[in-house]
Every structure is written in C-alpha cells, then in structure tokens.
Image 1 (cartoon, one colour):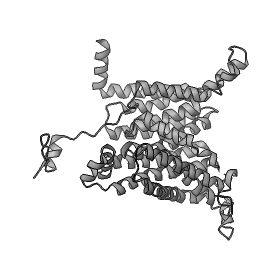
Image 2 (cartoon, helix red, strand yellow; image 1 turned 30 degrees about the vertical axis):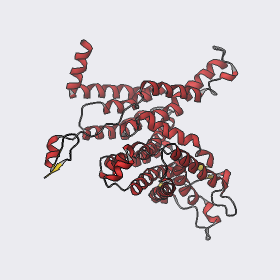
Image 3 (tube, helix red, strand yellow; image 1 turned 90 degrees about the vertical axis):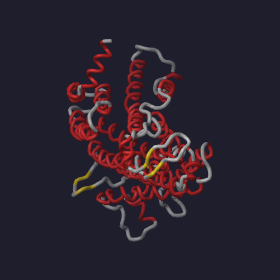
Length: 426
C-alpha cells in the first residue's frame, strides 16, 4: 500500500518529478565528469532521457529539457576526463542508428513492408559523398576538380538523402506486387546487390575503388572550422536527428501516415477506401531511405574511410532488430531500441568482454579458449535479445494510437456511428 501511495503521489506532483529528475541528472553527470571512465554512470546519464519521457510534463517542456540534456549536460559531463571522445563516439553512433531506425520504422512499422536490405540506402548516401569528397571522381570526370572542399558536406547531406530516396523508389517499383516473406527476400537481395555493385565498380571505370574502399574523405568544414573529432560530429548528428524526429512525428499523424497504417492493417480495405497503394508504398520507401542516406553521408565524413564491408546483411538485420525491439510503429520505442542496441554493442558488451579477458589472462578465472568472451560477444548479445523478446513481446515501448475526443470529432462535422452503420456527416 505504501508503494502504491508513493507512486500515486509522485504521479500527481510535477514538482516532485522535476526535483527527482534534476537530482538524478546532477548525480549521474557528476559521476561521469569526475570518473575517468564509467560505463554505468554514462548509461545512467543517458537513461535520464527515458525518465524524462515518463514524466507528466507537457510535450513542450519535455522537448526543451531533452535539448538541454543533449546539447549542454551530456557534452559537459563527458568532457571531464580522458574518455571524452570515447563517450562522444558512442553518443554520435547512437544518433546515427536512431535516425536510420526511424527511417526503417516508416517502412516496417508504419507501412508494414518488411525491408531486409535497408543498409543499402545507408551505403548509397556514404558513397555519394565519399566519391566526390576524395580524388576518386577524377577517374571518370575530367578536370582534376576533386576532392570537393569540406564545405560541400552540408549540400551532400541533402543530396545523399535525395539519392537514397531515388534508390528507395527503384526498390519499391519491382516489389509492389509482393509482400510478407517474399518482400523480405526481394529487399534482402537488393541490399546484397548494392553491396556487390559497390565492391565491383573499379572496372572498367574505377568509380568506387572496389574492395579497397575510399580513404582520406574530406571532413566537414564550416566557415573555416573543420569537424574532425567525435564530439564535433555529435552536434551534427543531433541537429539532423532533431529534423528526422520532427518529420517522423509530423508524418505519423498526417493523412499520409494514416494511409501507411491502413495499408499495414489491410491493403484491400485501404484500397477500397480510395488510398492509392502504389504511391503510398513508394512514398514510404523513399522517405525512409532518405533518412538513411543522410546519415550515410555523416558516417562517411566521420569515419573518413568506407568500403563495402561496412554495409553487410548483418547491419540491415541489426537495424531491423532495433525497430522490433523498441516497438514497431512507436517513435519513442524505436529511439530507445536503437540506443539500447548501439550501446550494448559499442560499450557494454565490449567493456564486459575486455574485463573478462583481463581476469582470464591474469589467472583469476579459467575460461576455455573456445568460450573466450571475445568470441562469445555475439552470443551474449543474442541471449539478451531473446530475453527482451520473451518478456516484452510488443517492444520496449509499444505503439499507441492518438486519442481523439468526442468534442473534436463533433467539431469536424463527422459523428461516430454505431457498429455496422455509416458515419453521419453534417
């Protein structure tokens, strides 16, 4: 009873929620700032964003608070020790994968189209910038005009999204008549085709440099200031991610978003209601792919090197896992799922295997060579996903339909009708 009363008191008092959240942020950010490197403290600091989501504040206050946390608190807390760039690398990678997962969520979560080759659009964006930001383009464009300066990066963000959108439409055209498992097979083949094409486009004209990849890609440049470190790319990623989240939220509750959901539930019923299936599906492929293409440009500029091995089927599967784990069709769920999977792969499991290896090498524990932690990292990751799937089958944050009041329905001139009858319009 005491726990229930405390929960009710906390839920009814916004000032108490604000105080507890502020205290949590101060403690965790202080721990990150003062400790040389603490994976747990950094995870708890990022977890403050999840706590903010579950508070009872208005959406405006939540967005403003999240902006302060992302732009001020987290960068400042991470700058206290020698692990500053390591923290920012993980945060930047989280942002990249969150944007890609949100793009795939449009295709899979909203429109119900199972896409297993989504990383192909990521590769299109990366190579769109990489080819022209290195001397590679001189092989097929005369004049020794390349590499383009880093200032062109900002234009290529839009251009990379546009090119990926075009490829999304090209993918959508031949798969309009298939769905379900057959759609997954076709998109999986598309992803592999794109990777193989990039791997073999070094002859007869060397466009992508084949398996050797593209190196020394020009970093972004803004008014003479070069972006070369992870903490600088972090702010670029946050800026693009804010645009992506805003666009996805607007699309979700728009007429187009409702059309996607109608197609997902029943294509025949949607078509009978006047929804154009071809245009609706192609729009989902194009918009989702464009988000991935934009982040491909950022990835190429941040890594300064890309090759076909960065865009394998494993990457496509990982992005799909982020969407399913977070909750298909749920924007906050996909953000949480993408962040969780990225942090697990880049930080938690890496630190865990390193610690176990150190204990094994020092003789404190005995681990057979066949079961060494470095070899079992993917197994551990798979077991964690299985546990999440068992206990949270609908995702970490399940999708919820927007609630509409009867007053707003009456104001629109359409009155709800009893079951089996047609709605009445004024």
